[in-house]
Length: 144
Image (cartoon, rainbow, N blue to C red; front, side, top):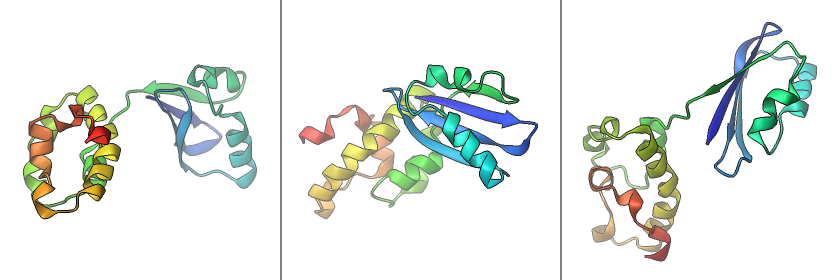
């Protein structure tokens, strides 16, 4: 994943653009005060594919584009994990994961959620601290 921050002297705040592993835009966060005309101007220039082209799209414009490290937060994990019991115990394991593991863990939650929905019996629920501690994101939940 790639993450870019766009700033400009023409507006306050920033625009955050995320591209997925396939280099396709997956999210835009507008944290800036923009007039509707400025918003349209900006949206027209952000490439839907090819994060490498984002700097070319704004060439000659009064903007600054910075590529930033992509970070998955504890709140992201907590929001996506399908079972909230003992979440306070899982918090101790989250900071021990490196950023790559945090990202892989977060991405795996979509398949784990589907698995969870297919197997609603209480004894099949995995507490979130076990999911993190035993690196359950490495499993192929779609095949289970």
